[in-house]
Length: 255
Image 1 (tube, rainbow, N blue to C red):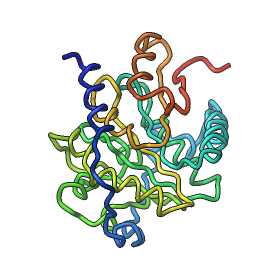
Image 2 (image 1 turned 180 degrees about the vertical axis):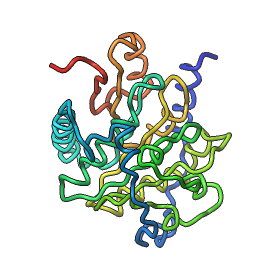
Image 3 (image 1 turned 90 degrees about the horizontal axis):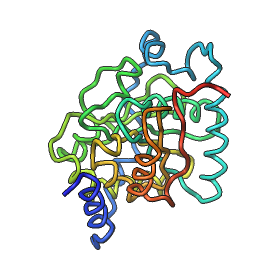
């Protein structure tokens, strides 16, 4: 079975699951963030977090435009969760996820949670120069309280939930009832919070296809000249065209 057919079959199985919704422990989401770990200035410069540092190419203006477009579409539908992915690795999805999350936290009257769901190649913490091993996988597999895993990177109104330790059966874990409950609780409990998920690329992991089933909207990041129109169409089909919030062209020539 090809990777695309395998992904479609896994997505079909996730949609057909009839397991009843179960609430997770209330204290897991109501306790305040305990860890405050300030970001490292050299890291945000190296990883081009332009919404926190100098921006010689004025790219932050484009992120402001993205923010406005996203807010317009999300608010009208009452959506709060956004999965950011790409067709292939190295197209700039984490760069986009981090900059959008920071932009939202700094410029609107809302709280932001940035979640790393790329268990095999987590990169959000390294973008901020933060070195912590525990994260989402420790909550899902070892019942570690979320209040002990959430991090404030020194940015007001922003929290990070790292991926945690690498796990072998990541597709099954992300498709589990516990993960789905967590996403639903995050969305339903906090009416003033936007939640960004930085996921693996579509054609390198089935995880994103599984996770996309219960995320409100998806942003697809595409590197200019790297992905063919056919591959892009395949990715959109796998993710579900109705869920695509937009496609962000990265590394192209500014208009």
